Image (cartoon, rainbow, N blue to C red; front, side, top):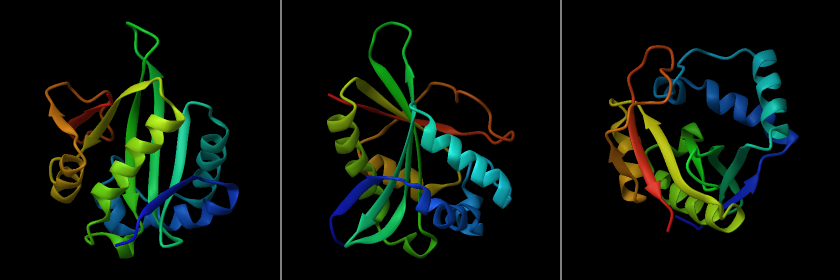
Length: 165
């Protein structure tokens, strides 16, 4: 398994992300498991690339696309420190090959370097997504007792957090 590199998504990545996101294996563990139509995806993707509070990264291993890592930034109420909501999925062919934890670790390093004001990462994971739970735990995330910020299509989720030193 090669080193994982992260780069900002660009308009040319739209179709690839659309195909990955709509793959049945990826949708099964998504907060919203419904298939997304092309027009809805294009609008979401365009807005995501323009949103200064959304970081959309493409993970690559050995120069080949591996997955998507998204951070949605939000300021905490008590200080100027920020937290970020984490969303991740792998290219369907790469699922189950052990890339998840390494991708998340690479993401922590990227955030630490590019957005030093982010002090906490938060992930919402479906309880039945054992592989994702293991990946987040191997990457250093800890299960929290905090409730999920918003129910996604009435699916209960577990909260995992990573405190960035």
